[in-house]
Structures are given as C-alpha cells and as structure tokens.
Length: 156
Image (cartoon, rainbow, N blue to C red):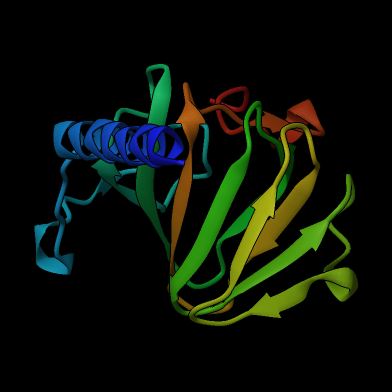
C-alpha cells in the first residue's frame, strides 16, 4: 500500500511538473488593446482583418487568431485541412453547413457562441454586422473553397 501511494504521488508530481514546464514555455497574454490587426491573408475575401494571438498560422503547430469582418462580409462554402475551433467574440456569425450557401439553413450564432468542425467539413458564413471570431487550430492554416471560382486568390 505504501509503495502504491509513493508511486501515485511520484506520477502526479512528475505529471504536474511536465504540464507546468510546457505551459510556462508557451505563456502568452494578450489584452484586447494588445491585438495587432492587419489585413487578412489573401485566401479570405478582401475586407477582413486578422490579429494573431498565439503561434504562426503559416507554420506547423497550434495557433489562435481573431478574424474581424465588416457588415455584409461573406465566406463561400469551404473546408479546412485541420480541426477548426471558433468562438464568437463580438457581433453575430450566420453559419451554415454544406457545399451550397443556403442562407435559409444558416444559424445565427451571437456573442459567446462556439463551434468546432473536423477537417474537411464544408461550411459557409455571412455577417450582417461587424463581427469578431476567434479561431484556434493547427497550422499551416488553409482554406479550400468548394467552388474554385469562389477562391479570392484565383480571381486576382
């Protein structure tokens, strides 16, 4: 019994140290005023801005960014190569699933809403007001539009 207790304490202690060390290595704090907004990557329609909070979306590994879009902004049906985890920070996203942008099937997700999608799941979004969402995923970040004609990079 005493040996089992010592093994358990040792395991808990070493797990805690390992977790603390990795959390300490990746320690990041960002207040809203610290976010540095820049034009969104050209893979998104013009008019959006992004602020990278953690990591690097162009490289392998975890990253978090905020995406700010103006009223009237639309992202055509598309997929991503990795899980996508999204939280609505301000405004409302009109979010729909599928390979066709059927606005009648979209759901309004207000501030505080959350969704997570597996890789390759087709979805679309549109916005009736300025909105900010936070996206957390693994890089490199990518978007594949269902219809190549919707890809902003192909229309330039």
